[in-house]
Image (cartoon, rainbow, N blue to C red; front, side, top):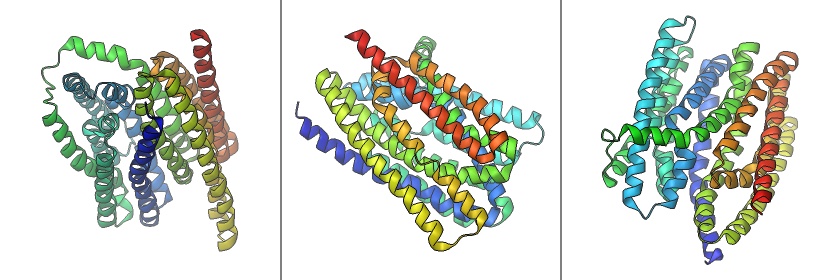
Length: 415
């Protein structure tokens, strides 16, 4: 196997997929200042809280497709019948999950008073778009150019529609809705292409196959749900403990972390399918490849984080901002180093996933989410926003340490 050829192709994939993710990151950075200026920081906090709720609910629609699905498609991309069966089962389950979640959401909105009905009802389009989302499939077949098209078109529609439609304070209820509509338009087009190419059939999937799929993938769903909870639930706790204003400030800070998390997502999504492919041919070469790319990744990320950290001080001193805004920006930069902790666990996480240790990942993530609930609530109550960032560091250190220990014990056991 020619590792240099593989590495060149992988670098090219990073650049292609990374350019699409740059657009993905640019969209909220273009939308946030405009929406905050028109609707206010409190309404931005409400949007952030609603978005977090929908991200958590999307886990039940995605189920295991973002990780195990990528692995399944990557390992069997030459076997069209196997891929067709897996796609049919996956999207049949997605349809059932979507209808059930929408029913429960509408029931809650009707029965529970004081909820922002219009924001959440319209925002449910984001859940519908997730049913169609084909990006996980294109990651599996390593078609990153097509992923870029999907991202660029959907985010362009979203940004332009926000600037065109959101013109007054009450229009904040349309922001999540517009993101959902933009995604539906683009995702559904590419979903139909996959549907026709692989001759999918959602209605003929047997009950036994659905149950078997659920049993196989539920541990990773617990893991993904726990990850979604401990990364998205802090803003809901802050909204409850400190109010919409501070939730809005937290959302701005979280955007900085999201930029680096998205970079790590690019790295994971490009490296994992390739790691799987190499591993099934030559385990030793796969391990060497994993070590090499992750060392480069951590060094590169460290350079980015340190640069951004010191550049933030330059801007604060250069422009003489008012005290309230300065304090907000100082809070935001504290998110940066969290990404380094997350980056450390990626190779060990990939190894556990490859070895089908989804249960171990699920357990670690579950306890991480419990730790987040407890630490974020009490630290935010006693130390305000600074307490929430301390909570994030505590949780990420716990998760990373646990994943590394579990992976190393797996190696020791195999040896």
